[in-house]
Image (cartoon, rainbow, N blue to C red; front, top):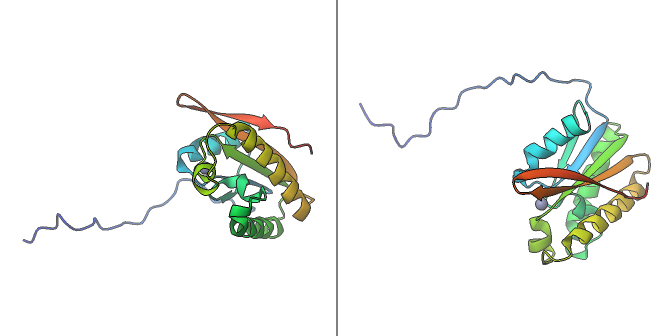
Length: 162
Ligand SMILES: [Zn+2]
């Protein structure tokens, strides 16, 4: 019999234990695609904000894509388009913006160093909220900064002035 050790195991079907929610949700969250924060963001939205569920717009930089950075104007156009699509299709009434410490979007895309980045993250959350309010004024907006304390991720509310 031939050896099959180099073969990829056959994939089998998988059934999720999570029931499907056909009615959908009226809230969406915008956050960075960085998977290191994904489980904590999900936990925060479910247990911290007590959401049953939410639509997701997970993109590199998250809310930074809405903050008017010239270096990322193409990303901003795409992000605004995606956000408007979700808002219209799912009749969203609430949008939650979450940025995170150590975001690679700032160091790699915008070439910003770590110093002063906290202020920048907060300023960008305010700018992102302003931009989103311009295009979707009916959305109630709130913002948070995901911060690190050792291996603990915690979520600091950020005032966005609306
Ligand atoms: Zn990031």
